[in-house]
Length: 458
Image (cartoon, rainbow, N blue to C red; front, side, top):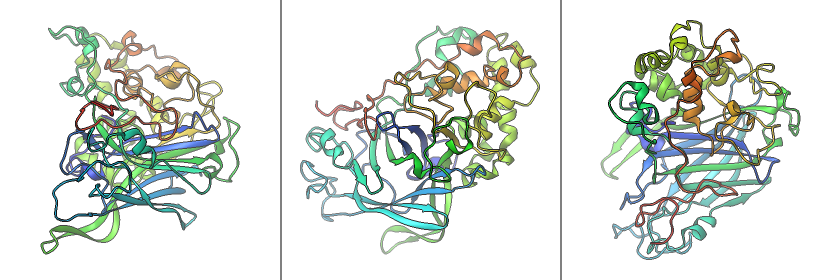
């Protein structure tokens, strides 16, 4: 999964679990960039009566690096507060919720958003309402209209949203984690199971989304509008994090955990699948606690990934060239740890400097594609992953093919990829709720009564 339950400790703390990060030039507002961080993985729409929500005891952040050192030069910070209106009922709502101000909604949540840059913190907006979760046709009868009340425009040409959405990530969890089998190529796996289409394990699952849309000028190091794709100033690094207080104490009188001390990072996410697939299990929690600019400690897992060694074993005779390739994977290091330098892909670069760091890297001078190719840059669509990440991008297939050797010739023309490298896939597509054409782009969450993504009536 992109970052769903990706490390032993954070899997026990889903409220702070970063699941996906997206960064792309807004297709309908190309002078802006949209940044999305998702949390709380694998939400069943009918998971009540205590439905999913952001943690009041967690600080959520989206970080921007724009000076070439993988540091957090700009941070958008979000913290939440939750109210219980009626302490005498067990119900999430005592009647239909037709407005975010409805008295029948018993547990409303609000948030504050801040921008931190150059050592200064500026509050951009306070007490912004989140939407309720999509309970069902009686409790949230017109969910699309209800959620739209929480698509906030705030000063500076910014837009912001925080609340439940349908997960846009797709992957065949049941097969991938069953000894690395991929249903469309079962025959290559030499097992007596017929080939089949991939099964989207995240079908009908929801997440909690933080999305902010900001002018491009706000993200460049000098406040300029990025227009030259070959300029270093056009490229930013992006990652998300979640932090908790350093120590916690169980307060028996109040029946809750109380945090003390400074905030400490407990999860982070940049590129999809890195902590799940590349970082060994014994290092995953350590990786989550460290900032990206210290990722040189994990570089060996990028330049010599375990999965690249496993593919020839899992698929005997299918990847002979990959099995014989003993050089460090400079292609994966460029994609995941430094960005792609100029000259590797004609007319393209998203290089952020030599500091090894796991971040999404977005070249803001590259315009959105009218008809996005879900395979992104490897299919000739320079507006797609690994140039940032769009909601449409099929990152599982892209990264599977990269690990299988498809991108090695970009840095080592002497290598010829095995034929399977260009066709290997988990066989899924985005069968989740339809994406929106405008901010916040992610589809409506599945309803608890309906148990289908994006539906608002029975």
